[in-house]
Image 1 (cartoon, helix red, strand yellow):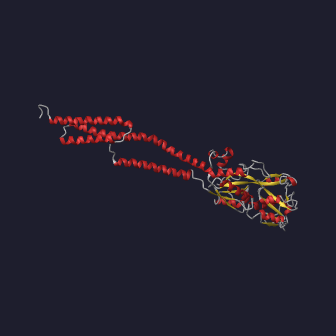
Image 2 (cartoon, helix red, strand yellow; image 1 turned 135 degrees about the vertical axis):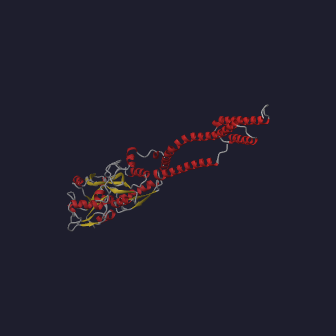
Image 3 (cartoon, rainbow, N blue to C red; image 1 turned 90 degrees about the vertical axis):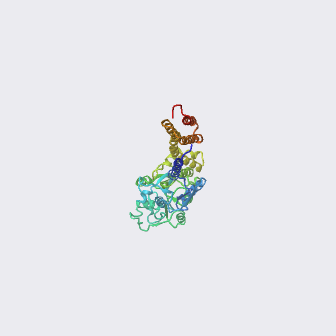
Length: 454
């Protein structure tokens, strides 16, 4: 059966529109709902000789094994890290616990900020090192001394200034008392100055793994202060808690330290910007569990990473990780294979939501179209039959009618109908033969009229 070109064009347009819809949907899912994670990630760490940067190097090695290039951005410390996160110039950073209250307005309120915590990764004690100063009764003994308080504007500097203000070593405006000198140095540089007696004391906020802390703890000539007011100071400054460095934990052979040391400590947060891809959040959490799980001088194995006491709301990925572990697919597939399968699933769900109902509608629609093709031919056949019944056709009209019947039969023979339409096609051909026989009988009557007719 001949199908009009306009009908073919309509169906071609329908299928083309369907293909475009699927392509647009696929593009939207892959770019907005489930974009691929980037292969490069930036992390703001800290000073090159500090614990944050050393941690960053470990993250870099672990993420490289999963095909992620972690670019480390050294900084002056946690304050600059927080600023970079707020400016969205870095994706992940180490942020000192309690930094919001310390920076007085740099950080938005926790419920308003888009920043999120993945975990706390360890204690960051306030280490107060000196030569022979007795600081057990408080930091008043630092009055008139040369004290390294960290780089101006850093989290270390803010902690040191708050503590010195509490003891009156500096006034409310940050001006030191008479003959007191504040040195804006930190890390290994300040440790070396203390060992060379160029300064009298250091106030250092750092993880126990920090090279400067390790260097000074191993030096028997350097004294680590134990503050008797740690509990009271923790009440005064809620971002602190009291921790204890146990006797002999640094060097059991030489009994260092010679007694338990009471320290103030905050916690380090692993904080991410809102732009971080969720798959990379899981990868960072997996790296954190490998890096920060071991015991340190201040915590037992498994204490960190932890979802507790974070400065920012915990991400959904972190909440799932600490409750249920890694995503199901990442337990059985390499990282990029798991990401691919997850994206494929997210793509197939909306496609199936469209295609399943569509394919339920298309067969009836196709059947209706095929029926329509048959019904149109039946309509032509019915018109011829009624014309035959109403009058006698001329020879020319009979020849035209035969041509029409031949065309209807030819269309029925050559058209591609489904197998279940075969009986209807044969029935149509039988009806064509029936009408053709009527025309032939009319022609015979016209050639041989009955006696008595004119």
